[in-house]
Length: 558
Image (cartoon, rainbow, N blue to C red):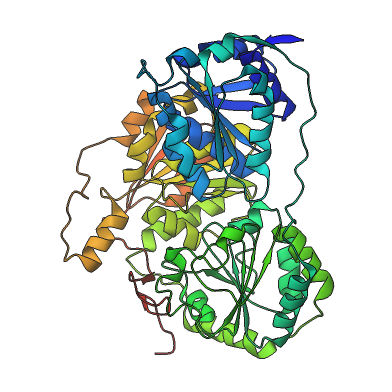
């Protein structure tokens, strides 16, 4: 059948199983929005307050469902407003397809009104991108974009479509969505055998888990494998939820704001098994001292990660789930009783620091977990509140903790919460924010109100850019340059202005009572949570120090 280019785009989205898109209309996507109007009832469009919100919402949708998230923007500033969200998705390997409009082909390259080379701009922060110049290639381009976004290491893909291609017509024939198989083209059996031999030879194996485990839905296989090897494990920020917080093998997060137990264990082990993690500088800190006593076995789907930051003595390249299944089959039951005893002794000696410098935030987060249903989704912004949530929340599960790890994007959490709530309408979604981060994208309260999304937003309000202030306190002689947020913003009044319920949690209030009331309302709520200005995230590794050299922990052996 003959369809317009805009209709072809919508049909291809339906081929790929897309039920929801996030976006904001503009001049160069009017034909596409006209097609969205015609397809009403078959595909849902969520109008965000800003294109950046649309990109974060598509990302939150992708992370919480495992499917590809889709966002739409017009040319020029509409397209460039997606850049932060695409970079966020790229750094955290989240599958997003962004569709942008552009000026007609005859006007490209002429500095036309709202023309921008969005393909060139986003080349470094997408897995792939396209500017479609032949309407005959439009359908296959959209299909290929979805395949690339999903396969191997997931990531964002951008398709730029000039306006005349959206209104032109072409023959369209429906095709079934291409099934994306696990990436195993570089997986060699000899590498599996060598990995098994390393595991058998190790006396003190330690697993270091990243977001690749969650992206490949390999949490079940990982937990079985930990039992078979009889080994402890730590996690990156992106890997949280792969192993339950109450699993005795789990030592907590590793790195700058990880646990003393995790950091010590990494530097005590004789074999470090790295699965789906990229050796971020926030984890390894001083690379010359990171796990220097250990052999490194690296398992990753992306060959570019091998030996990029830390040398690996052996690697296995391929889909994490497939590799773990093979290792489970070939590895004999191992025992490391003495090593696990060392782990437990150190767990008692180095508990997570709980002092007046983090007590109120912990009380609030503990109360939140008590009043939330077990099946919940947490998103965060970026800063101290993000690290407190990471350290103290115990109910994190795969695809249920949405946070910006690689890019550290302030403003991410509100949009991500929207994407998660739209895709999980029966699930309680909470965004944990700081007052600095929430200022970035609080305009998305308009989206939350418009669609009556029952999202709870906790604003951990310390009236400053808390994480930067912490660094200024510790390393810059308390020079609080531009980090004090003394503008008298009334977050409750702001929420009410958008048609969202606002509540206050003062320093003297019982957090459980206030948060229970917020949850039981069953509607959107912004809770202004007053916390001390100089609360700090401890423990902490100073920049450039060894990860064993931590500030602010309690040594119960002293």
